[in-house]
Length: 233
Image (tube, rainbow, N blue to C red; front, side, top):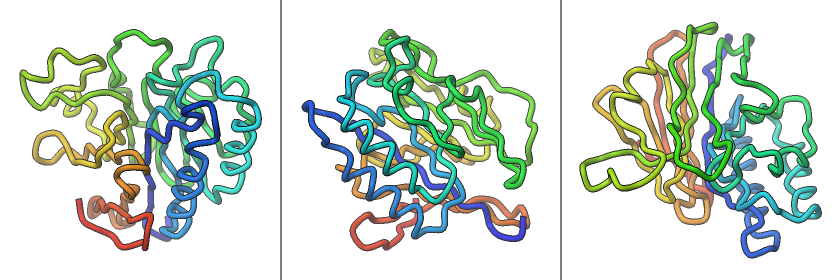
């Protein structure tokens, strides 16, 4: 690569909430912020749609917005939009560069970026293990997407779709893009690059991860959807 690898990360847009086109504006803001940051790939980590009954006009508007992304997009189905037989993703107009994990790809490989993106999609509304098993690397950089609840302590153990520190560490991923929380936050042990982006409605930002082309690591910031300012995470 002749330039730094730039990943944009968002989640929990809940397009179609309340039966209307709520969330489409948020998607357009996320796409615009990703373009302004020069993102090579946009990661959408679950609950992009609020449910699998999103009306066709809303779905068409989402597809139109995604078609102008200007970069590759990888979507992970979440607990609101699981990849069932009636999943909204079966009706979404797919374009080149749009990857739905579990539908178009088990992992999305970008050899020109030396990047592979994988994740465990929700396939129903039941509890499940949201992180995939580690797999052999095929590219220099590995990114894992997951939609679930990070366990910060015993008080979290009653929740569903749990993500534990040991699960994150076992992945050996260069970045873990998480969804399910409305707030943005870095989680995991020291040295783990695991981040929630938060929902654009409430966090009012997306995450931007920049990988130096010389292999000197990754820097992660929250980029404001209001004015483009960036805050280190």
